[in-house]
Image (cartoon, rainbow, N blue to C red; front, side, top):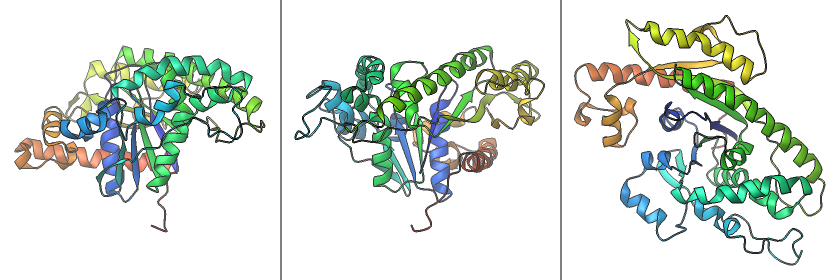
Amino acid sequence: MKTIVFFNNKGGVGKTTLTYHLAHMLARQGHRVLAADLDPQANLTSAFLDEDALESIWEPPPGRNSVLSAVYPILTGEGDIAVPDPLEIPVDIDVPEPVSVTDRLWLLAGDLGLSRFEDRLSDAWPRGYEGDVAALRATTAFHRLVTAVATSVRADVALVDVGPNLGAINRSALLAADYIIVPLAADLFSLQGLRNLGPAVRAWRLQWTRIREHSVASPMINFDLPTGAMHPAGYVVLQHAVRLDRPVKAYDVWLSRIPGTYSEHVLGEQHAALLKAGDDPNCLATLRNYRSLMPYAQEARKPMFDLKPADGAIGGHQKLVQICYGEFEALAKQVTDRCNVRQDDDL
């Protein structure tokens, strides 16, 4: 099973939209998919579920079958001691039941209350250098949670949506990542996001390597410590304007600067400076602006590429629906190839 985190510290680039549609497309292609919402804004969860379903998951606090209910024992700190009694069952994650969305697609629901976990994780990270067992349980909670839920549904791949920031929640969430895909818009803000994101991820990877090396041999660590691989798998440019099937000139200026910025700040290399996004092997796709398809999709609670005339997608919209399907189909193939996602032949 591979875990892919979609991450950019710049908000509004279409990260949740990308995760949602890829989850549906990968399931359509025969993969068993877990969509995990580790964003305290819970936008991915609200894309999948209506208000009645959300209320049943979120009420009463800390809710049930959500990320918050899973980490709530750690959040409350019950039994939080550095050297627990070996006869005591340590306080740990409470693995929830994922929500079955469609055939081969499940959701690990997010929760707005997850933001309360930020301070707990901020405090836990430096204590990991000391081998503090409770701190390491907190720091690795997301990794172990996603792994446990994905295993319970025998998922081939987990797609993880996170918030647009460089905070402690995302730092711990990225420990679950085998691969990181960066959604981008063709603008100055996304370029600046890359300049912030790349060094932060490299620093987190190095820090976790040191924490893990110091702690992995401890007999008190009787739970999985992730490798913290966080391999950069590439980027996807979303919502570019199209005229005659080519980006308009203003966007093309920013598109031309993305390969060099990604190469330098995310990969720590320099050789892609003269490439265009369409020629850059790190560019998994450039997806157009699907205009009014998104409101129809949100109303119908389905992917844009599944819209029918009964959903309001009539006339020229049906052509755009077909284009959308083809682009996400190609992107899903790129993602599975780049991230070594394989179907379980025994299923």
